[in-house]
Length: 235
Image (cartoon, rainbow, N blue to C red; front, side):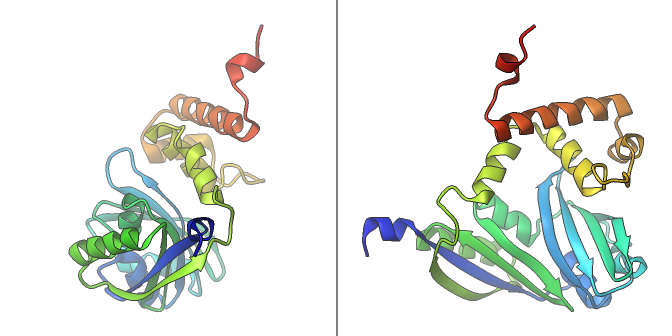
């Protein structure tokens, strides 16, 4: 295989997660529904925030399994007749966090009826070995289902890489405020949540919330448009 062909290939590692001590697995089993991870980001007070879409169960049943879990705070931020969107603030390590901390791309984090699946993409076999070793150490109940090499389905500079490059321009607080606004319907029309509600959720003032949000929006638009505000807006 030529060097160019090899650089266009990646390794996918698929893990099976059926341990109900992982909240997303427990919710899918107890509520008999399906959960898919949408967004994962660090929480400013420690731990990580995870947003999952849930399908297949009434919204009021989704949070029942984790109401008494000390290490997890859970909110139902959107609901419909057959599911909703769940926000988890996870303080302990979880499989999605391990994937992210290893520098892998989490292509799939899902659970359906108590059967969880994680598919992570890495650049090489040695990276895959390191990821598996990390899982064996931190998540002994998780098993490896498959390792496979495949051609990249996207260009080398993937959508994930671009998203990461934009998100990394934000501070932790700006990232938290922006994603909280986005995932909780602040940008929907009609608006699902007001700034004052989200500021209270984050335990900051509405003015501070708006300041962080505007700064984050400016950085994101600058990255998307490849501009520098200071160079463009000259009085």
